[in-house]
Image (cartoon, rainbow, N blue to C red; front, side, top):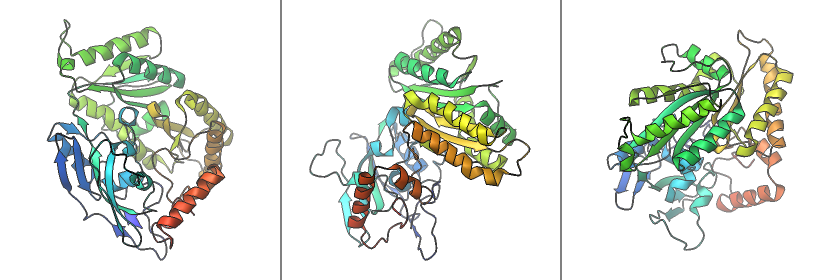
Length: 410
């Protein structure tokens, strides 16, 4: 069983009876940064934050970011095809991988450490290892694409009454900014209240009487974005202010705050990044990691919420996440003050969420993988021919079922 930073949420790296863990913790280090080609090569056990900081020294950025950056490893990120907060603009982990090295169950080393953007020489085998969660081979190294470091950024928190308004705002901001939206996150008031309760020392830049808060961020690496206009403000911040003024005028938002410095920006992000921890401290939540087409996301949210209310009238619906790419962590927290029947309600609640997901043709896993926890659901929801081919690929690469057995394919 392959282990990276042990930050996964699907049980993929947790050994079971008669299983041996292979830790990649010592297989760590940056091998090369090519400033001209804008690539970074590193060993699989290297923490994501180490790679981010190494790239920053060359005014470059690895545009893959998630709250576990300090402990998750790049090998694990690639093996699970990790998402995070910047997928809307830059794509999943798969989008950043130019090449990789992997070791098969029989010890064969597959070297595909390609560093070229264009390379159409035969089957692109690296794509099989990305997202395979260590079931086909152990990723040991990778070459990653970098991008120019943003030099201007505008970050805001806003309050909106309706989920539909969030999607309308996202569409508007993308058009107004010329697709410079880096992050677009949503959190319902119920979740915001839990975060403020569990982390009372955190700054509370905005309050919400109802509805949702949105965390929106646009960025640019263009030098002219730093130029100030007649108002004395940088162009990007001015763009955000005009966008918010129009949104207020059209009653799409009821309140908004723009970060005026990096400390305020980090305070905004602390609310969002600590939301998972806050719900765990509050209770034993029902957690999901689903994705739905953006045009169906609001309808799914309402459908799933109604289904939950038929099971648990007073539980707190905390569907939050990367609304920009259709990925929600549609979680449910027990009623405030506790619920003696909560353990018995968990399975029906999860079933209700997945039933709603099926109605809208969504995915049971957006960014956290299948691991051990979703193998049955995967088999039930995947096209039968698709699942059969997946099984054939597993049997070809690992005929003795040695690598991460009973993960993904059961």
